[in-house]
Image 1 (cartoon, rainbow, N blue to C red):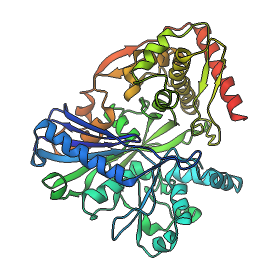
Image 2 (cartoon, rainbow, N blue to C red):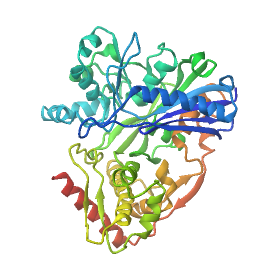
Image 3 (cartoon, rainbow, N blue to C red):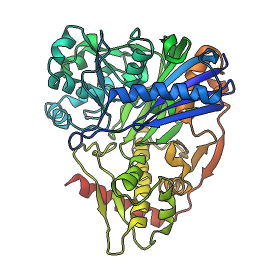
Image 4 (tube, one colour):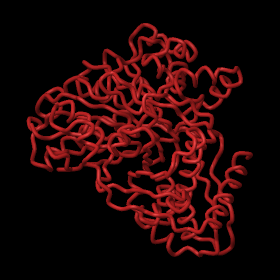
Length: 494
């Protein structure tokens, strides 16, 4: 048994990546699935799409590599966080579509709780803010809006879980209702200091404690996949939410190390060690990972739209056929036009936390076209990254030279990564292995299985593919960023 199977269940697709004994990728299978938008600001998934694409890609990854389930030592799972599912503990049937992390339907409820003065206590317990982003208010919405759901939940007949939890329930034939500390820390229901579900938060959001899963370390014996799923029983030994898995995959194990993942959204995490740093700049305090019962914390900045802005260019405007076309268009853009695109399609995340803001474009002229929009879309990712880094530096004090380790689909664009470096005035390091999220999940499972090295040994394997150094003149950098800040301010006041 010399392989590890990593499940990477994301917002727009499910992937399965098979790693060999040297942590090299042996095969990859991926399948996209649709998002559903039943109302403005609402985003849902069909739970069956999450499950069926996960199972199909796992089987495909094994077949492609010519490997059987008996060759797999363990499975690691990483997942889109905060996305909320509720299902019947007896039948496994979901009571509603999964409500996706991007969904903003509970914005008014969050505002009401803020007005009542609850946010300081919420932040002190959970490290989070009162925002629709997190699972807790989504769960309450399901209980209050699906007929009979609250009564069934209070009777102990309904279970709650994030996507990792739902997949484990399905993979183990309904035997395991569990999650890990990183996913639990994103629910608004978990006390990150006491490392347990918070009765106070459950009472505030009116969520029955009996619905919640058991919480484990990131590397633990979660359960066993049944034989009928993949052809043999396989233990699940590693679980982490996608951004924490990427932090692990980037070997950011030392306090002060920072990574940023550019997927559908963009998420920057700064390792703060054993100290849960309370942010004064609207960042999140979260669990980075938990191993051997010891919790390591991070400051996190969450941007809701990064790669999704490229999807909008493709699917919404139809000005590109493939995501890779964006860089070519950006290179053709008129340098005299400096469009600013604020991609607040589902509100703005850190450090603004404005769920009701919507996207806007500033600086349009008669000559503005697809090339200028493409460049503005890519630049918006860099501007938002600087927002996060400046907030982190304000919370932590000057951290010396900031070096950002990056991963995710958008990092394949040299143009985008160079702009990030330019606008940050800091180096950006792209690793040789871009599959950081899946690598993190695989290492957790492989380390627990005894197949992969310990933390220090794993960190020593990290290697850089390319470093981007800033080359933009200071005056241009500051002028461009000031224009971004004005555009965001205008968007916030709409």
